[in-house]
Structure formats: C-alpha cells, structure tokens
Image 1 (tube, protein in one colour):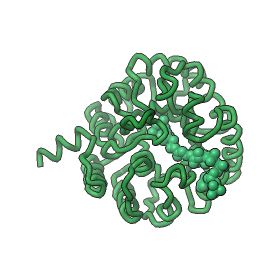
Image 2 (image 1 turned 90 degrees about the horizontal axis):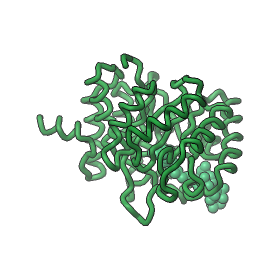
Image 3 (image 1 turned 30 degrees about the vertical axis):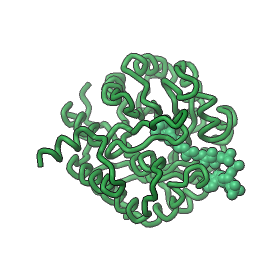
Image 4 (image 1 turned 180 degrees about the horizontal axis):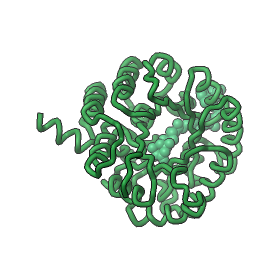
Length: 305
Ligand code: HMG
Ligand code: MG
C-alpha cells in the first residue's frame, strides 16, 4: 500500500491509565496530555465519563478535560456509555465522544453491566443526543477476535454489532482486539467479512490492538493491507481494560504509539507525529508511574542516547 494518510488515535490517557492501581495525580495526567498535544497527534482520547465506582482512576475526568491546554489542531474525545456520561462530556467540551460495546455477551455484562441488545438501545439514545449537539460519534466494538470469557468470537457477531453502530450514526468503528489474541489470519478473516458490511468503505473502520502476545504490529500491517487507515495506540504501550482480565490475569497493554509511528515511518507513511516528542511524553508518564516503557522503540532509542 502507498498512503500518506494514516491517522493515529492516541488512547494512552484513557485506555493507558484507566486500569492503573496507583493514584495518578490529576496534574500529571494533564501534563501528559499537554505533551501529547504538542507531538503532532491529531486525535487524543482524554478520559471517560463512566461510573467512578467502576473506573476510579478516571474519576477526575471533568477536571482533566477542563484543565488541558488545547491545541486547535487536535480533536479531544471522551468515552460516554450513557446519557449521564454524554451530558458531562458536553459540559466540558468534548469534541468527539465514543460509545463502547462488544461482540461478546459476557464481556458486555462485565464491562457495562447489560446485554448487547440493551447496550445498543442505550447507545442509540447517546448517539441521537450527540448528533443534536453536532458531536461526532465513534463506536468501539471490543473482543472482535476473542473474549477473555467466551474464547473465539465469530466474525458474524462482530459484523452485526458494527452494522448496528454504523446505522445509528457512528462515523467510525474501532475494532478492539481487547486481549491481544488476534493474528494476521483471524484479523484478515474478520476484515474480509466486514468489507461486505461497509461496502468496501474501509475508512469507516479503525483497528485497536493490544499487544499481549506481541502480535499487535503484524495485525496492524495486515489491517493496513486491507485498507484500514486509522490506528489506535497508547504511548509507552500502557493500558488495558479492567474488565478484560479473567481470574486477575495480567491485563494486556495497548500497542505502543512509539512502535506504530516507527513502523509507519519505516513504511514511508507520514503521520505527522514527532517520534521524539512521543518518546518524551512516554518518559514523562513512565516516570510518574515508576514503570518501564512497553515500547521496544522507546527502549531502543533511549539506549542510543
Ligand atoms: P451500572 O451500575 O449498571 O449503572 O453501571 P447504573 O445506571 O445503575 O449506575 C450506577 C452508579 O453509577 C450510579 O451512582 C450512577 O449515578 C453512576 P450511585 O447512585 O450508585 O451513586 N453512573 C455514573 N457516574 C458517572 N458517570 C456516568 C455514570 N453512569 C452511571 N456516566 C455503567 C453501568 C455503564 C455506568 C458502568 O458499568 C460503567 O461505568 N462501566 C464503564 C466500564 C469502563 O469504563 N470500561 C473500560 C472502557 S472499555 C475498554 O477499555 C475497551 C476499549 O479500549 C476497546 C478494546 O480494547 O476492546 C474501548
Ligand atoms: Mg482497549
């Protein structure tokens, strides 16, 4: 493929931090987002308007949204599972919202406490109100190839949820390999079926890989080959969904933004993202968390210094 128009959606401040057990001071989150805002990224997922009982780490969502220094070139989005979340998101000026469903009944129950059908009804209300407020809506579908509770997920189930979310009015659906069990074959099979759903309009889809088994980058290349041009990633490879872990097993980090930018640069695809600045943002947040980066590229390049 040749393309200069691959976009990265930075999900680090949301997916990256949502499951951290330690307290992260709000001002550190804000500083992290400010660093990302000046790296050339055009889309940043800042936080979630969800129940603080379910996701305590993001209980400061409003404060974070109100305090970040907005770069006019960046679109700042937030997750909103229901109307309360949407109202909060509107109050603090989210420029995009995301509803988040799944292709697994058990995961949906564990993550948002309802059935797939109920979730779609709830999302429909959110989408209709967001449209009235002229806010673009992204849809997430989790567990697109596998579920921590149900195992392999059939493409047909994914297609069904994707189709409904598009009909509702989402402008883009992000396909979440929530626990990183996909490989180029399962991703390819899925995308081949989804092509029929979207009538070959692959710009309606984005890919969201977790890197549990080190498969994220090959899955991203496979997705690029299939025409996907929007890639979700998290600086330093932080993250994972708190409700994706069965029996307390290690939660899988997202693919690292540094690694995705390096990959795309090496393929001659320009994302407009400054790799050094992402590495600096990653250094900042991993210092705050007192953790090592999960990005191979960040480690390799910091060794060189
Ligand atoms: P529930 O308990 O069924 O809902 O939770 P409820 O309506 O009965 O409300 C319970 C309490 O939450 C009430 O408070 C509500 O006011 C409050 P109480 O009366 O007990 O004091 N509440 C809220 N508070 C703030 N903001 C809100 C809100 N809504 C209700 N918006 C609910 C249902 C959806 C709220 C809950 O299950 C929830 O918050 N889930 C969020 C889980 C989550 O954030 N998961 C991670 C994101 S998904 C992900 O990471 C995957 C992804 O990255 C893609 C991939 O990797 O696959 C996107
Ligand atoms: Mg995720």
